[in-house]
Length: 280
Image 1: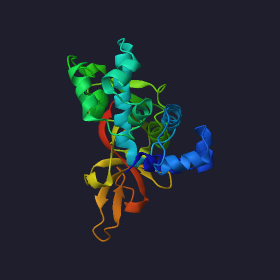
Image 2 (image 1 turned 30 degrees about the vertical axis):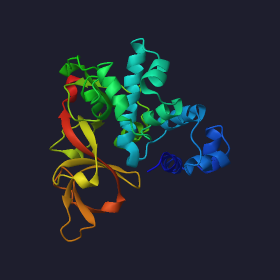
Image 3 (image 1 turned 135 degrees about the vertical axis):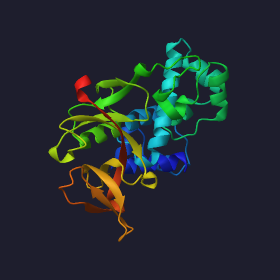
């Protein structure tokens, strides 16, 4: 998929017309059309505006993984600049790329070349696994990760739906953090409700990880975002009588299971861990 095609999907996902999106980028609708058709390259100024615009909006799940890798790459660059290495040095002398290309890498719209990874590794001692794994590994190879140093976004007192929306928008800079041993979790949130008994007794803190419909582990607990924008906590089982559906079960056996069409599921977050809230 080309950069232009990705920009078009971002725009459509935001519910914006070409005219509205072009206005946000300070360009004409005509030029946006050329960009979306890959007939015109992004200028540095337009790429910078695009970076700010997309960073403040919900990321389509199709690009969530690539976008997160781009943000991890941007974090590496930010860290190197804080170490006194100028952006000009990195962009012009080390990477030899245009500013617009760098912005597209930050967004996950352009693949990070192997040559850049080699420079980061060989010249600056960067652990390039950070691009894919993020905070689960240190940025620099000679840094020892202490289990207690891992911070995760913690959506305390958010509804499950609001927590997912905030996480997807990546606007959680001011959200409290929870510090826990390193684990395969994207974020934490509070869960309440009598119908979650006996697994959850009152309030609990759940650590969840985004996953796809192709990776469902039947019987496991998932936070499910439906396309009707409902967020529900259920265990997922196959529906042997209808392959187009899943069966969803609450923790309380007193509630009947329900069927849901697979196509009605928007996003899935597997519950990976449960934290006792009385320690926080």
